Length: 124
Image: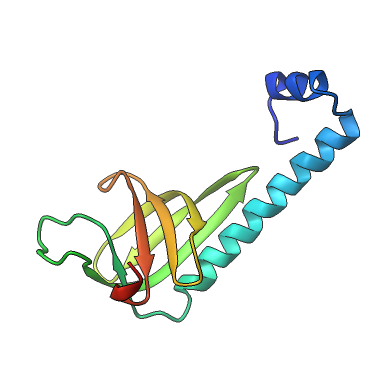
């Protein structure tokens, strides 16, 4: 089950049965899988993306990145993986689809920030 013991107790105290808690837990896990698939799909086939990432070596408001791949896996409500650019990569520790044109990834060490990505600068 996705929920820890305290959360399960709180949900039972709020009136949910064990079966209802299990159903909600399964819905969270499935939504997480769907989000990961949508994020991978967004990057799939794109050679270039734009972001709101601050970069020391770029003066562009929305720098351009050549993308090789986004590889994600899920565990309960966690999305983890790796985003590979042309010459560097970064761990992904979360993400969400903001619109058809913009996604947000939480990038790990070296970036340590939430970064929005779009296929078109104007979308940012």
